[in-house]
Image (cartoon, rainbow, N blue to C red):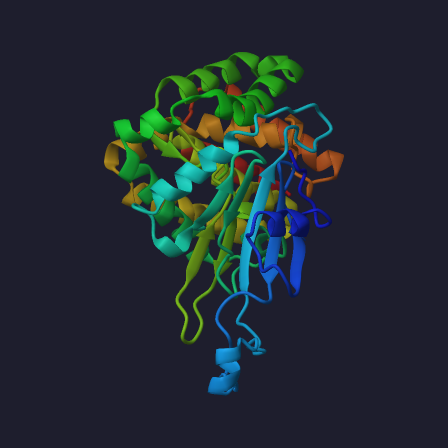
Length: 369
């Protein structure tokens, strides 16, 4: 199996006929996080010729080549790693790539076409997936949030897309059959986020075990599994353009508990609030807009279940991003980490498991800072 890199990608792509045999092809590394090699491919000699064909009829008949520049083509290829780039050992099956491929194909029937990548081709021998590029002008939402740029419209758009994902697949045997196998979700979420932390923080181990049971035993709909700002590209509305949220990385997709997705995004927004310190209110407002939009638009029974029990899942994820296998990289001060640990531990041990109680509890810690 070929291991993709900026150095090996061009030969691989030309060998399989996926780019022009001649001409310039640019290969650019993108952030694949800890899990993937992701490369952007710009084939300058692909696409339709630009301008007017200046050859005479005789030249065309003799086969003189058309020298016009071509419009070019751009796409992304990704290859999953067999072991994540983390300090703690974290092996994961590469066939999660086919989970992502199938999810992207099937989700085009229920999500807006411009909200997720299009599958172009896949290579089963080398575990490579080719997808379309993100919309022009879209920027990574995580990077915006870390600079204190908070657009509530992005939070609302995230909630609306997530409701579509959850509601459209709820209690649907087709989705459950394809994405109900828990192995990938256990490898990528249960083991590194819950079991790993339970071994380190014994006081909350029973609570984490109960959360694991809740996440695995009561499947309700398709969940994204990594519904985080790092996997969202946001383009604010401008003249001649509409607002746009583009969601990436569907490799953790699982037929499971929708509270996990809601808690995941809230967790990341609230962690940004801790990071922003005295500017925390902007990130908290984004969290509030997301949660309120989701709760008001999701099916009532689903929203009620998440509202009643999602707070404890949020607390578990908050602690996991301090002490799990993949701690957030932007919170580096040990004093601040300890504050977050204390906040999450209190939430895991208290009797009120509601989402609102958890958000209010976290807000109290932010306000003290």
